[in-house]
Image (cartoon, rainbow, N blue to C red; front, side, top):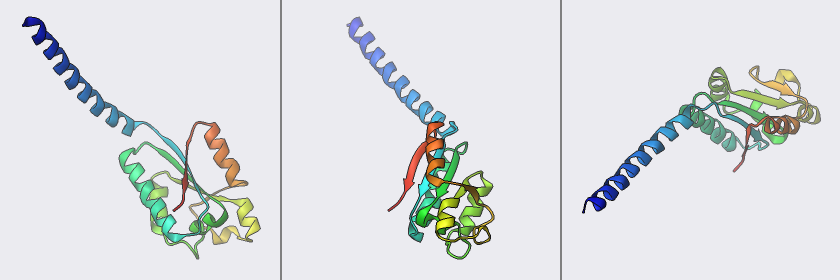
Length: 146
């Protein structure tokens, strides 16, 4: 009878410790400084709205995260003063450290001048190369699309 009691207590203790460890692990992950590079190629403003909402969710759950959005091809529209429907959210996210990057190759191809791009934007020569470099540095990659 004593052996059954010890086994039952051991199992109960294991369950309690396991539940506690799971709770601690999830809160520890939220505080980890995640590094996320997001590729945006879509000109769809609904994708842009979804993207800034998701970035807000990431920062709410893991505020120490670094996030960089690389806009090229049709995604460059999100960074253009005349086309962007999310300028307020970009300003808010940029103030929290989110980098919004415009691809100069796309700008050249589409004949977009820097004056047409929001002032919060940074620039890289080749957007796809920026994504590759970030991945080589250990950043997680996400592609924003429908």
